[in-house]
Image 1 (spheres, rainbow, N blue to C red):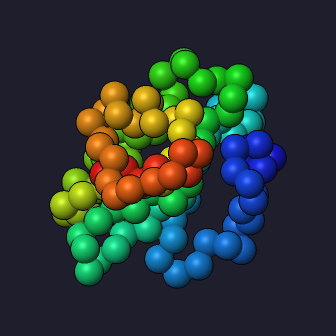
Image 2 (cartoon, rainbow, N blue to C red):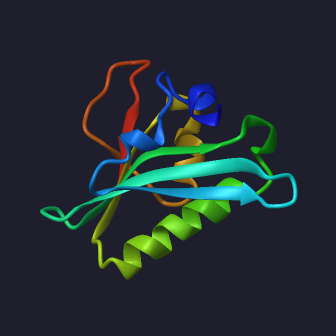
Amino acid sequence: SLSEECFETGFSFKDLSVGRHLALLVNTILVATCGFCIYSVAHQDAAFVIEEFAITPALRGTGLGKSLLQWAVAAAVTLQCRAIQLECARDAQGFFRAFGFEAMGNWLPGDKRYLE
């Protein structure tokens, strides 16, 4: 599954507890998932928190990730969030930095990065 390809542990719909949401990017012609974004809203911080964000490896570089991230930013604005936070792998940092995300905190080499 896409979640298993992109993350150390895959997710299940059962994992979507109260407050966690799933946005799917789907190819309706092939009936295939092209990407997804699992997010929550941290009301105490007024932050839109992207918990997992993935695009099928074969479709990376096609603009689908950009479209999904633009959707997430628009959703955060609609929900009146003041910040968007996410954790990403080192190889995804350039993608998110291109959209204005900046690193937060201190990390050791090889750690995942927290961006805002």
